[in-house]
Length: 284
Image (tube, rainbow, N blue to C red; front, side, top):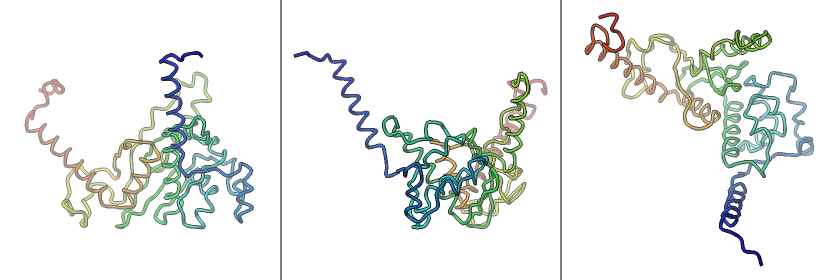
C-alpha cells in the first residue's frame, strides 16, 4: 500500500476545504434555463422580448433592465431579486468574471458581488424616488433634495451627471486614430462627483442635527466629492444611493468636510501668513 506524503495530504485537505467553501458560498441565487421557457411557462415575458440586445447596455436603464427582465417573478411578488441573468451581461462592461454562473470555479467573493449587483438593480429599478436617463441616475431625497450622478460601469466609478457620455465619445473617437495613445483624453475628470440641488455656497439644511442652518465659504460647489467606499463598486453605489435617499447624514458628512477644509486654511494662514517655507518659498 502506497503512503501519501505530507504535501499530498495537505493539498487534498486544501482542495476539500476549497470545495466546501464554494459549496457554501452559493446563496439562493439561481439562473433559469437559458432559453427563457421558464418565464413563458409561468406567465411572464421572455427576457429576449424585453431586452434590446442592440442597445448600449452600459446605459444605466438598459443595464439594470437586464436584471429586471430576469426578475419579473420577484417584481410581481414583491420579493427580493435572486435571479442572475443568463448570458446578456457579456454584452456589458461588467467584470467578466461575474457574467456567467460557474459553480465549479466561482469564489465566495464572486457570489457576494452578484448579491450586491442584484440588490443595487432592485433599488434602482423599483424605488419610486430613483430615476434613470442615459448614464444618469437621479435620486429624490426624503427631505426634498435632489441628487444625481452618472453611472460609469466601464470604469466602475460615478461622476458628475451628464459628463460620462461625452468622455466616452472622446475615448472612442481617439481609439480610431493612428497611434491612439497620443490622442486619448485624460482620465475621467468628473469621477466621484455627486450633484445636489442646493447649488453653490449652500447652507446645511435646517433639519440636520448639530449643523442645521450653518454655512461656510467652503461649501462653494454644487456637487459633493464622494470616493468609493470599501468593497465592490456595486455595494458602494448602493450605499451612495441609500445616503441620498436618507437625505440627512450625507449633509453632515459634507459639511464636516467643509469645516475641516476651513480649519486647515485658517491654520495655514495663522502659522505661515507669508506662505509655507517648504512649498511657497517663492512668495516669501
